[in-house]
Image 1 (cartoon, rainbow, N blue to C red):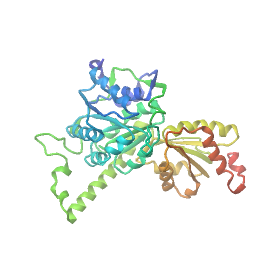
Image 2 (image 1 turned 45 degrees about the vertical axis):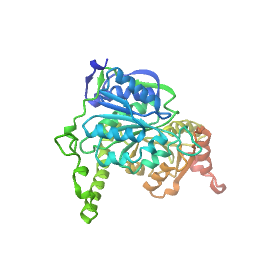
Image 3 (image 1 turned 60 degrees about the vertical axis):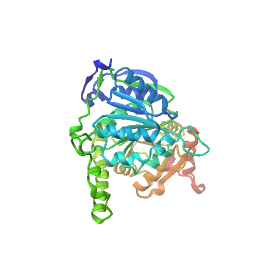
Image 4 (image 1 turned 180 degrees about the vertical axis):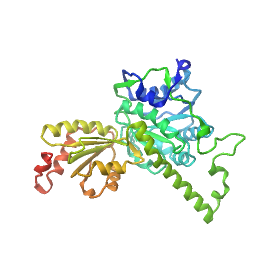
Length: 394
């Protein structure tokens, strides 16, 4: 089947063809995305709950969908090897989880600094002691300032869609940065749900490294600017200035990604009931739980809206400000102990006392709908004072 695939325009693949519903796991959704990504290479190292997804990508290699695939020595070796493949002009994919993310941490800012459009799926899990393989997304907080684009999937459909779209956005010449597609492990990776897929015989256009803002690594052309420019290894003002300007360009490239995210992903966030005064703001699986909480709140006569954040980097600051302009309460449920999303929202808006960071679940705990509902109820009843105007959604 791999040899019968034909390249089509990305937007046609994303929304211009009929899709069929299949009932698959999030791990299988990853493989379905890579099947249509026209990727050259994937490199893997097993770690729960990511292992199954890269095993399935290995099956794609056996079926001819990839030119090369192998298992690395460890997570750091995988990310270094993926970096080399991308420097050579290939479209590459990999995935990791939790402790694997941390073991490979040095490579992620290296990817960004060398302007390589690598796509990596992160199946988020605990990284604490005592050890936990269960879902939480604290590792996302550790990656916020590495320079990569960061997209957070709510479910298996999101995971499939965001991986394919991440390739297209990351490879834009004015962006050309790595992209991480994040999902809360087990909740999505090992759960089956309906996913709408286009035909198997379609794939993205091939990556053209000649359009890249940095030259590919080969025997005839010196490698990327940072490698070939010795002044960056010096300890003087010129070296510091050059390094600083390069870092500024990485940040600017991420900002330039906004227009492409709007084009290919439909925006950096989605808003439901934009005129509500109470909002649940979430990313990832917490969005799904928030949807259920909204049903309960509305049944109690409490009008509330939903802000689903899809892009974490770049962060949708302007969109958040606009969406919450008339909000009086913003509740932010998260699957991590630190509350990184609540901090990002508080930093983005005025009068951030409106933001309630919680509930926060971690260590693999699930998020019952009642926890979110109670967070809203408690916020509406501070110091024993009722807020009938908010309860009525006025």
